[in-house]
Image 1 (cartoon, helix red, strand yellow):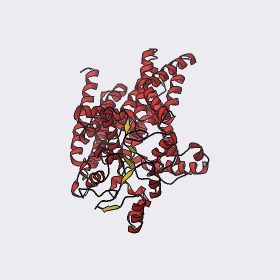
Image 2 (cartoon, helix red, strand yellow):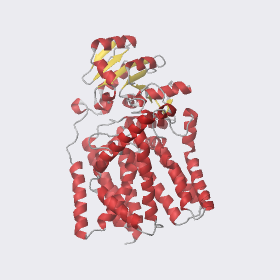
Image 3 (cartoon, one colour):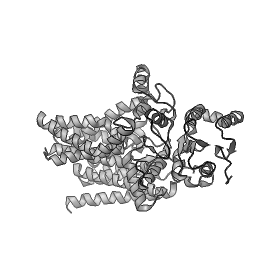
Length: 535
């Protein structure tokens, strides 16, 4: 069998394995749009499909503060600040193919994980041979965190990882082959821009890619020419997103950098829940707090990293293999450049993110901002395992996959809603919509679900009730939904917990907001202007 056929069959095999596992996991665990991202991207995609463009009916308090500062109106739709365009358009395409439903969003995630597994198999095969590619693709397809966690939450990170993997491989191939084709260098920059349109933190690596091209060229003149072509390709493809950002926010990237920098420095709260703007300058005026935050988040990274994605057995093999690649004296091999660039990228991101954000999504799921690193890690580990004696490699692979299987077969997490209702049938969302007019806003801690399932304009609850009272002076809020369900993340809203547990304070707040009806549901508290007919 030819090498190309071996690679093709390996990619198809891991793609099918991933699809089968994803379908089974979804059947067992899928409840609908539990995450903000799932529902917000779905709502934006519906607007795109309807011809409204990249717009939304949902906003966070900090977004409203930016609207106020930039004099942006939010009548029916608003510009999107906190989601990435390419994933929203991909979701809109899924809606066009399969209809506007939770299942379409899920199907896109299933296909994306399958494609990531296949892309890993292809790139691994092109670097180290089809056996390494096949093993690496299977590792991605069987990773429990991907299948049991990220798959169900409608995130853009699988697609981002695919594009970034191809972008790095394409770039390294051009450098290694000393290719001087202008079109290929423009195309390489365009692929990188697609990664930026899928996740804006690619901007962190933009200078790294440009410098890498310049340094690896045969001469300074050639390096400048090739990096200029690459950057031109990047800017051409990224231009719609750049224009959109400058038109709405007067910045190259969505203005979320200051939010993340502010967290744990000038505010202990999640900054996007505060009805105010943050400036980088005011944060930089607190250097000791910034350094303290960096140290804390760096230790958090070190603590969790060995367990990330259940790669307990993958990381040691990957590090040994990486050492072997770097020990090779022939630094012109493509694998050296490929993995060296990934190493620089991960070091740079960790150093930067220790100033910005650290996130865990449950007891066993962490590292969504680093999913792009998983394919390179899987390829490296597979290469080393396959270098062992036959019986040892089989023992090692068996241990890896049995460990994955243990996590995949864990009992399903108990359903979020009493009675196992899927999210689209949660009654409080319907009741909140029924007791408010179409033109008004619903405030709550399920804003994305409200926008997606009820099709209503929604505002995330701010940190403090008094901030919502301030917001209501500009936006007509006719219902406030405060849920105790886990997707509402009420643990981030201590002042609202206090309020709903204090009947007298809740009554006074309802009067201040001109929302006279207080409805206590099993899972939520609802304040509304009009008594809902369905209650």
